[in-house]
Image 1 (cartoon, chains in turn blue, cyan):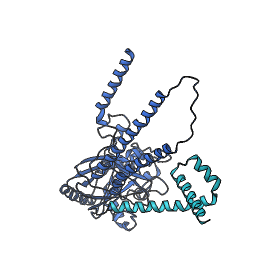
Image 2 (tube, one colour; image 1 turned 180 degrees about the vertical axis):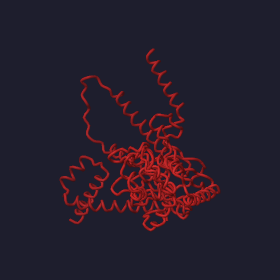
Image 3 (tube, one colour; image 1 turned 90 degrees about the vertical axis):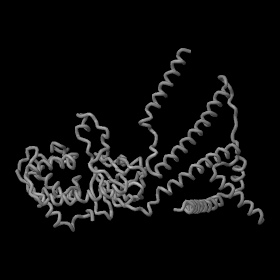
Image 4 (tube, rainbow over the protein chains, first blue to last red; image 1 turned 90 degrees about the horizontal axis):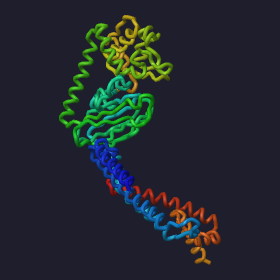
Length: 382
Length: 69
């Protein structure tokens, strides 16, 4: 008796602690859109149907085991078929499936209707970052992970939004139907934000459509949901939903910043200024592969420290950074970084970790190259 | 003769439908094997498969039309 009481006490304690952990519930999020709520309702409906079936099936099973129990040596009863029972256990599940299919179809039809959107955003997956292009807005930027390397390497305590924080949020207006056009630049990625109930593959050479209409302003985080290589877990998504007026204001600000960047490329930069900015750009855009120490991970990601490219002809170095290197993991950064950032990072690579060419690449030189080759910029933002 | 053909077709059809459904009594199964012809089952089976596909297409069209998509 004492043991049973202990077991019951232990079990109830476990249950209590489970409800205490409801904060990080394992269940689906109801989300912040009409579609996400209907997905949630659908999930719960089907869940409870499954619970009811489970209770009935296991109830009958356990009851039968107990009720029909026989002593050792009992002769089993022989019976072969019962058409009526077989028909019943085929019809009943069919009916249940149809009952679940009706609301599921209604939700799916809603989910797959991206027509009459007020804003189009193209989302492109890269190894390992997202690029957001606001079509018809002349706005285009990359969104990179900002979690410091020290937190990833367990040298620092992990932050609140560990691996779910980026430098530039995907800012979207609330109460607006937004069409999302998904594609990828290299391998298959998948853009997944649970609060919006959007999870869609981004496939190179294809455009997939999804849509959302966010009801509540807020920040919604997500991740890449298709294994895409080394840093698959390091390309989060952060959606920032703001009221429409604030969205317009944000658009104006971002465009002004872009103008300022163009102006910054015109001024003359000292080697030190370029090095300071270059280090920031390097850690954000290059360090994942070439490592913060410039030693790379050979043979996939070559070292830059003491490399013939970083120490040799500056033209070749610029070409590789701007246009990538065919048949390797080296991407073309001409669309990913501004002229100033490109100049700074190339300067940094030529003068950091004991690479001491003393050469500074000026932003205006890069701006010239970018302008001159505008027609060969490939699938850049037009 | 004529009614016999109709009756045999009808039984074959019932056998095929029972196959689609997945339940057939042992006595009916024995009769199918004794009196039925394999070719008839194959032909009617293929025809019913096509009918089923058409049924699904019509069902989807109908579902889309009532949900307004």
